[in-house]
Length: 202
Image (cartoon, rainbow, N blue to C red; front, top):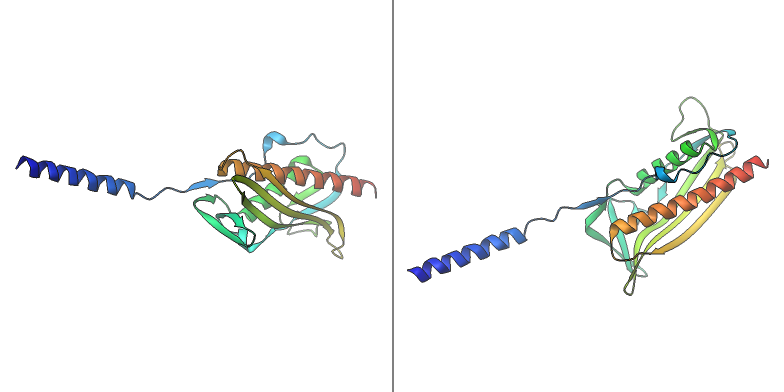
């Protein structure tokens, strides 16, 4: 009788352990946002123009909440339990707007104008936004194009392209999100300085 009770207890514990191990894993969410602690010093003057930030054109493979990892040249997969809190094209469009509003290169900056036709539009295309696995190394990869175009005639005035990778210290998606955030800031800041130089020289 004692053996039967002991066996029943062991089976019950095993079943409870199996139930605990099958508990669904809660997803972890990551954000891309303008780093307010890196606001550049104010420029000496503001350009007397209005700027509209258009929605980012993001390659469809990376335009979801899922974070992509590339392990082969023509093959990507997605992390199961790690996602963007907001789709990257939405968060990075807001990021650009926050940058230009803080730096004040233009007299007016907004994502959408209803009452006026802006002087310029900023077009952004992102071709890759992914983790790359290279042997035992993991890299953050960002390939982005910025264009400043005149609204009238859609003439490109300033453009900048960056295709960058950054080695991650370890396989950690918080480090990946931070690397993307930093690289995006650096390239946007470089592009903004090109705008300032080109338009002030006119």
